[in-house]
Amino acid sequence: MGKVTIKKDKNRILLTELLPYEVPMLFSNEGFYAIVSSGKINNFFERIFELSKAKASQDNKKYGIPYNFEIKKNIKGDTRALSVIHPMNQLNFIELYEKYDSLMIHLCSKSPFSLRKISKIAKYFYSPKFVFEEDSLKNSELEVEPEILDEETRYLKSYFIYKPIDLIYKFYDRHDYQRLEQRFNYLMEFDIHRCFYNIYTHSLTWAVKDKESAKRNAGEKSFENVLINLCNWQTIMKQMELL
Image (cartoon, rainbow, N blue to C red):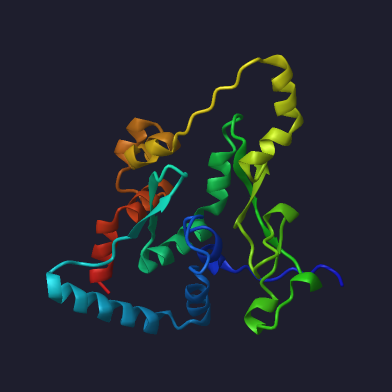
């Protein structure tokens, strides 16, 4: 059966882009994705707001911040803090990807040193191998490279295709790495994950534009400013109060 182009599904980032990779296997965004795609999102959030207000009335706190949890990262028992984005904020990320996905690709293409960067958006295709009973999912398959297909689920692992490699361990099988092994006697490795908690969010604007331009256009509705606001849960709380 031939390949067929299908309409774009902007909601699919809920399945692949927003949850930490390390969430438990029983936890996913599949139900949330189904609600958003069905158009019943208003009823869903009415219930969320009812629960939030009920809880807030008990301890005088506002709820809408991410859900934070810890996972074990090694056999020594060390932990790593992770967060699940509040559902309201996840909806805003749908709009961010829909409007700025091409710009994200452009910005990531600038560095010649990256081993894993987004290179293009996956396109849709029709394949009997990935057809499922649910009508809402029959036409939601994507044209992607084989390594980003998850054959254990009905969905894809990523909204984007990554180049030159999609997983870092594949670097060690590349000819580039083997050539470097022959050239050098030592390899230095270091883990930079601890720096993420100390990144000043507004430095994103300095990376996308120069520092002076960022200051002059602080109120502009640009990609970097929209993303910074999405990372600021207090901004999201103000948006929720207006609903």
